[in-house]
Image 1: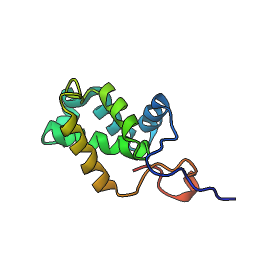
Image 2: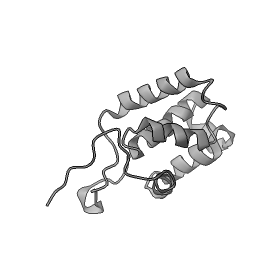
Image 3: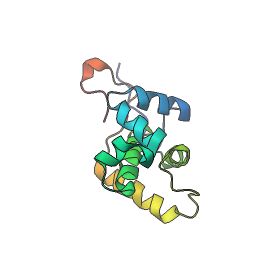
Image 4: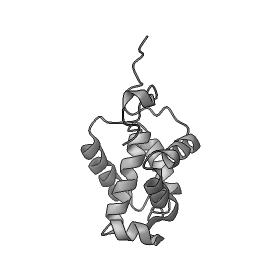
Length: 123
């Protein structure tokens, strides 16, 4: 029996579980560097031209894993090394990053019913 995944905008993972899964995914090293080390990481600065580009990459990861749940993305982004301080001062900036990430991802997101036999596992 196939069940439909929850609608977009509703995460199926708790915050810590999402971070754990993202770190252990096939592209988890990149997530780890962005989330835990941010712009201070030479590896991040080597890949991304500007901090904004790195932030957009991290938001893409978070949006995908959170199934477009922007409240969860905001909470997790605040915990990341790439958060530019108090997000209340950067609300419009954050909203624009999320909007850009959603435009890039479309309806793609984490599927809790996915199994490795189905194909590629993450982003």
